[in-house]
Image (cartoon, rainbow, N blue to C red; front, side, top):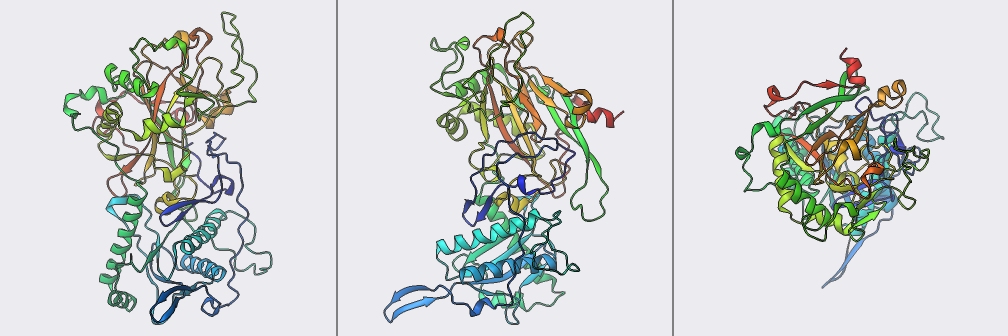
Length: 578
């Protein structure tokens, strides 16, 4: 929902953390995104209240430390693991001090030497964020360490422990609880991080800074702009490397055979443009004086974007066979070899009252074994997501040309984890029951390599990646008036006023919906008149990355605004525009 800001409620933050080259999952989380009044994520666990990290004045260098020993000609040679803070960007002094306290505590726990802030090797802190062209929209908050003498397992444990503590520092900014019940100093309220930080550990093999460069940077004057620029460039390269490593901004595949000049511009123009589910938000920092501004989610419907030939080939990809073969009959419903009951991720609501009879008196029975609708098997999902399909590549070429002002990418695994695929397929049938949900919201994403780089922010924020989904209806024939099964959108701010203020988009062969991922919606099951027919659709979860710093992310027309239909304001957006 557009009107809600993330207060980083601990119950909405899943336990993902960065462990340099892997995502260590500290909790097993079912990422079923369910629409609540504030479009929050319903997860089945709660993060405990923050606990103050206290070093008790112990110098970690005096602790007994695990030594990494190797055999040499002269005997055993042992090296004590050391973590050396080198430089940071985008952090204020209080935040940097807090992070160093956390890391010092973790060093004590694992017996690791820590050096920072000493006269001979002071940490270099640059106030400006590290901005990388390859990661436009990144917050640029980086803390770089040099890691020496670590074996991979120890480094992973070290990074994982830091991740857990940093997550807590991000989750308690609105908490009234003290960090530590033994701390009676009310004049010093607890300090929290304003936003996520990319804490990066480079081993000696990876570190490109040589000793002379380190000395030059460390001994720079406060007004030495050249060295500040060098630090910013170095940290920007780390951000870019991180984005590339986790494929956060990889452009969707495009087909060389697809020529954007061969398609009429009118096919790239929506037939319906709706603004709904809106409210006033404040960003980027609610702790400073920021004037709230109006924001609403966007819903676009295209009736000429997907031709019938492409629609048919996309259907073949989804059902795993030729839809024109003698073996395929749409009236038979989903093939149970390829489809599994209950694997459709739209969230079912088992507490719904019994379904009412149709007007013709035919009673609709629930699918007792469903727990949701038909969804592809794991093998089927892997196939459509990661194997090459000409039809998928052509559709992604169309999407790329539809949004020329952005870098269009699939939702990377690092945002929500492996259980949420960048593509999925739906096959609702008569009697299925579904609940309202959102696809994703960058304001409540779990801690991960993604949030390390981009942080959490309201969708459609200027200069930040925008989360959108694309849905294509695939059936050869679908009579919406008779068989139903629209996609239903809900305007949450006016829900209580009108008893489910909903907007239905009727299904039709080749019709395409492009919507913001934080808008509440649900699948509606076909009516009894549809028989066993499934209403097939294919969904892309996309991220639109800005091409320039501070880019306006609300303008989607790509130079074709004069051809667009008049905007239809619905629900809260209609009230705002009265």
